[in-house]
Image 1: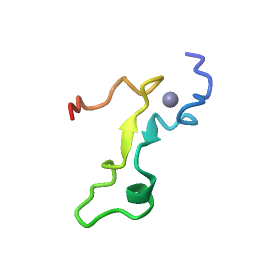
Image 2: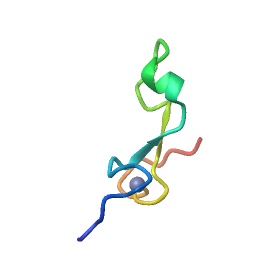
Image 3: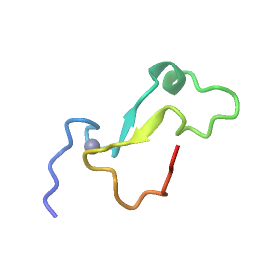
Image 4: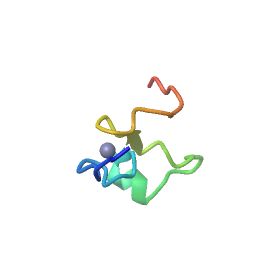
Amino acid sequence: MSRQTCERCQGNGEVVTDWDRYLTPQEGDAGDEAVATCPDCGDVDEDEDHL
Ligand SMILES: [Zn+2]
């Protein structure tokens, strides 16, 4: 596989959807509430998360 670094997520496979919550997680947050799977590259081998 020759995957280029994704511009959308910088290769993380996730994109931040809520910076406030990402930087300051609310009590009880597991850490993924403020991020979403990158639609460009991160749509594989992730748990199926239908929000
Ligand atoms: Zn990506």
